Length: 266
Image 1: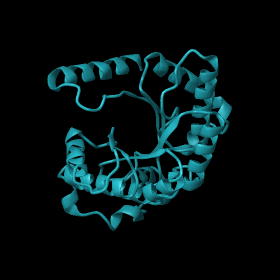
Image 2: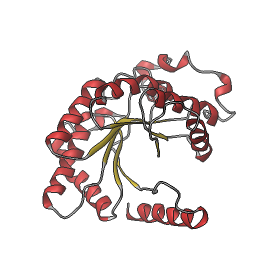
Image 3: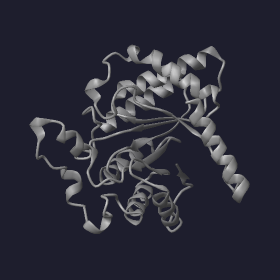
């Protein structure tokens, strides 16, 4: 973790020496990941308390490195988020660290985008997370979805935007850029679901949206990103399969989105 933060900080310094600091300060988001295998909610311990000690170690290390944002991402169950929030609260009570803004990003079924990969309802999970963060007096700045098909995220973003519309919480969205969705890959490992297709994305797939290696093209992903913004997201990024050229296309496209709010690119 320490080496990763050092490299990120060095990359920012190198960039700023080359092109200048620009109008916005470049920030480092410290990733707080799932402790078990990504996506497989059944592998997550059922007790929130069992998760807290490891999360306290991860979060404390990131805070020692003075990251600008704590980003819990690719989270498939609400109990993981509760463990993360309670870990941060425990650290906050010790009074040794400043707690930076907190972003929570969930991963959803690509073929059932109103549900987390744990089958929990996305809306209910978001409400639980916001309520818990408020009760612990934590600086929850953004909540969103990542590591899911862009077409699924397009359905999830309006749901989340409605939940936070009366708050100052932002919505974040950053999708995968693979032709094969995570849900399809997970189904391929399950003998009982062999041959099942991803109903959410199949109707939207166009051959011209993908390159010869099965990656979503930068222009195609930029169209999705523009849709995320139009639906209420203001923190936009790219997840698995995205490359610098995807984010360049996103930044270029978002310059032309009418009525856009202040957008953060991650």
